[in-house]
Image 1: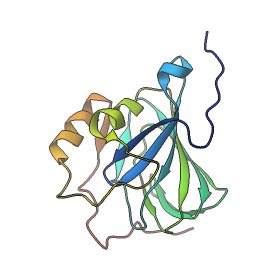
Image 2: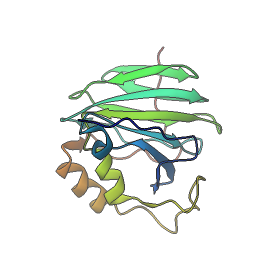
Image 3: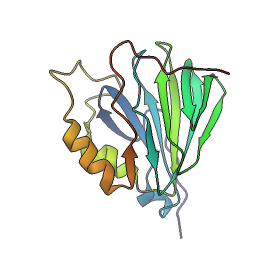
Length: 167
């Protein structure tokens, strides 16, 4: 049986991951594998590569700011209050548009959160990480991605690349 819990605003397991701060409010360990959830902040222009999950669905809830989101062939702007559902099997990608963007990211069932723990590092505070000293270890990120049932669908976006939007 899953036990109830509460995490206050500043509580959670915080991880710095490729330039973002993720503060995990729930993990599979805490939810008996039902879901994981993290609050994420990222600098403007931060983008995920186009990727597909085979084991879990993802949900984005925009708390503040604005994001561009692609799910399948659909491109959207997601503003405060928006909810985006990215079902497993459909490629998806997002890009942070505003400096004050903050969103919840949730996966169901749980398990993929461990990719962030494996390839990130414990955050030294609930702030964005310092600028990286070099490019991320793409081999490590991709190798771990495959173990968690996800795959990248193309090269990561480069500086200045935009996630197009149509809605």
